[in-house]
Image (cartoon, rainbow, N blue to C red; front, side, top):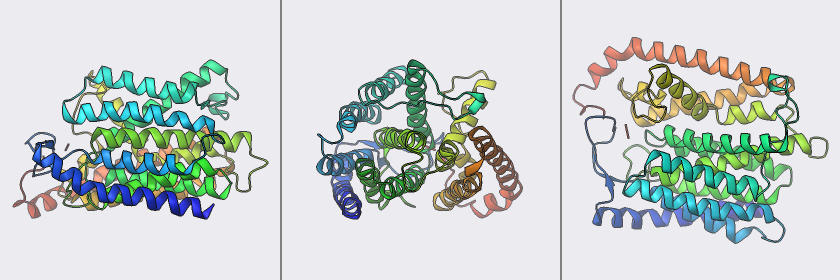
Length: 365
């Protein structure tokens, strides 16, 4: 299994890292850049937005090169769904895609992998006292969760390094678990994504030379959602036969994806309470609180990665607790953490803003 991990990671890393300089040059020549403004954007220079092309290329080449179509027939449906999502992302990054059309494409891609790839949740693990669920309800719920995860990563991609780093944490965790338990195809998929993200992050931290755009964030959310569902189902169906089972898999999956999921739920809730569309743009994301108070992108990203990792640490003692309680405890922890972080940022805002007075106004993509 080790050779699969090394090959998948290395191939995708090389393709991603070496393709980005070319993408940057072409984007600058063709003026395919994200221009700064005084509204929601945080960057100060025209920056290419096609980093997702490199992520997609590294992921797809590494994955399709190493997995056996005959042995892993269900996973081959990832490729057509990912290609459709890729072209939707490209159009949105270059020309802007209507939100309803983008949502329709996301539902289509989720439906392809759920229906043809036989990817679905079969139980709610006792959440709301519900155990096994009917076939069609499982399909609908899985499609909903995949679309939610795509949008969670799309929305969290607001400062340099954040979405890529969160995706990297999830890919490495799920990939390591799949490798230890003998799931070769899912291991290849996980570390193909991890390698592509490392190659991208080399050009995206601090003074970002490129952004991933919707092309990258939607692809990350899509693959991570697939890994999360497989992780949860494997721990339910094969709990007694795998070497390293996770008894409370839904809580652990939520912990791994805690920051993007919690931020999406919180922001959508605030927008609905304000009688706005949940897809309307604003500056209510958690990373906005950091950058609006003088934190650098690297420091804000570090804080949020720390919160995400702390959720994963807390989830381990919850492994024997019923799933409903495990997720509830994690959600309560995130709510309290969010409250105290916002209080801290509000208290320290004047000093930080005074120190940043010579810096041009923050403007979040």
